[in-house]
Image (cartoon, rainbow, N blue to C red; front, side, top):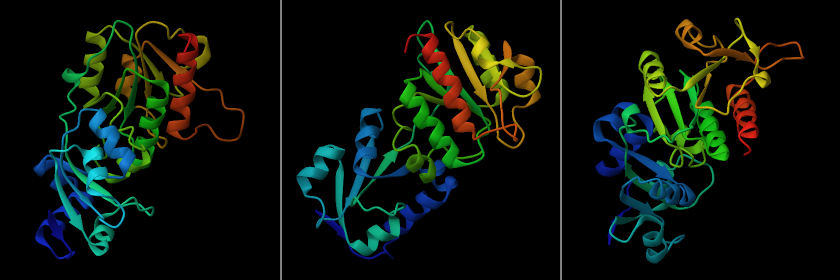
Length: 262
């Protein structure tokens, strides 16, 4: 089995670029996954694992093969190399190189009565990860990111989603493309916004529904407000007029799930 013990190894340096640079991920069509559960979820979600690097003093060959697949290249690495690549504070001793997916709107497979979350230009990878985690908890049909600010395979997204990047159907597109897609599928658009809004709990989400959330700083763009079936708002009873986007999305999503009988 191949072994790499130096953090100065050219291959390891290329993997550091995958961790740090969206351009490197785009050019190679690959990204890194850290952690046993995340690797298992990626495989379950149809992601192809190319290579795994692991600490032999923490994991046996057979355990690594069961996690990543028996036909995947396995490389033993030193702790120095692992610490160079590892993104998290906790150590599980395994990192995988996986092929990214295209995430096209046309690739989505929706049923007759979908419930979809749309996030326009989420600013922080951590918020995007939290949205994916909420979407998984509610078993949504899809998550669509309009005008993404972060690369979907940013390690912060993978980490903060606790692997839910791989358990959701995900697509990306421009705001115009996403609106056109939703309208072509006859999906009602409910936009969470302060302007011209009705309280969220008064609306019917039992038909094909997209719940749309914007940034915490500026909210949704005018294009969404113009395209919406109804603008909705969560009534605020304190001093501020907004909350974390993942919290707001969770409130809307689970109201829709309640109406649908969970």
